[in-house]
Length: 316
Image 1: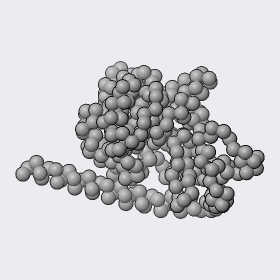
Image 2: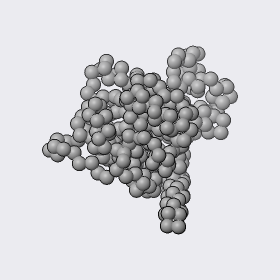
Image 3: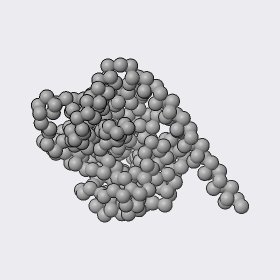
Image 4: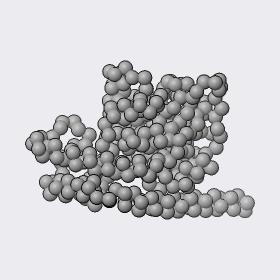
């Protein structure tokens, strides 16, 4: 389904509905924690303005502090780009994006309970990357839920399969959404959502009316490589500054790095230096590209076989 905007002479607005800041938490390489993003909310806002986005939805993992901070920054600087408070909620069934929130949604509930809480705040519920092999996802469960939209274009999935699965599976019951899933400002706006209007309120109404179109495409490989280098540089900087100054920054969302044992800090610093000063980012990028395409193909075959089995059962 492709939405048709009324008043076609007016250019549509552009919104990135799925972005992350350094409030999005940590993963681990062996026993060393590393942040999913080292980009502060203010940087995401500045780049959104530079790229001409009308609306920026910040959807950190199970947190809304980054989005609230970005909103304050927009008000203080009197910027034209509007910020929507969102959250990528970890539910028992997969990730759910809550948009236009006022309070944080707790993690660990069922998808249905989570969506009810989002709607209880007057927010909108969107299924991100519904057939992902990288992240917990809702899959075919989207058909059973009272979602407002489904992300049919996720720029973080570079393979030619996952977004195609979403586009084939999602009919006209939901608004079709595009989002960058950016964890660094470089990826911001790689995929986006077009909607009639320019404001956050108009975006809200467009999602409810299913008057949205996904735009853009998968993130270029160089943006993935930049993300890995950005994280390495950010971790290095965070660990070096406290060592030099003898103190840690209070209320820093990356403060888990400061809590590592000294030995692990030294290992992390050495690893960051080796990564940034060698061809490793490019080697990892190329190897990762092959892995991504392989995993995407596996997901395609898995979901396609489910469709065939379902169709055969219907005929019996």
